[in-house]
Length: 151
Image (cartoon, rainbow, N blue to C red; front, side, top):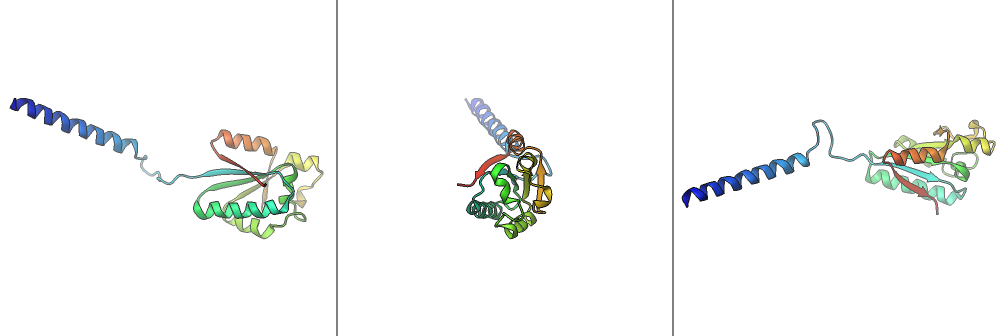
């Protein structure tokens, strides 16, 4: 009987050690990796409504206040292109500040061609993507979160 107790206690200790080892390895990251998740979010704006542009800049700042290291892109196809047109946007200062915080803005080149808008009319903070919708789909396929901005 005494031998049984020793075997039982030994087996219980071994099972607990294996469980602790397995749990700690399952929840540890490789050396050099941070436990902080990098959030990647692509916003799409498709409205010419300038009040939506103000709401978008507030949303972007809100996200960055919570996740300062988030990677954020704003893609403007179709009528949302006015967000990035120099003489039509109502939030140029906000976009400059957001660009400094790491937000990337992209004008849809397909939209520019369709609406005959020259690149010279686009704000300096903007980059370009060939097709806005395609870019958004590719980002989603890469695991980025998608937010449709506007009302």
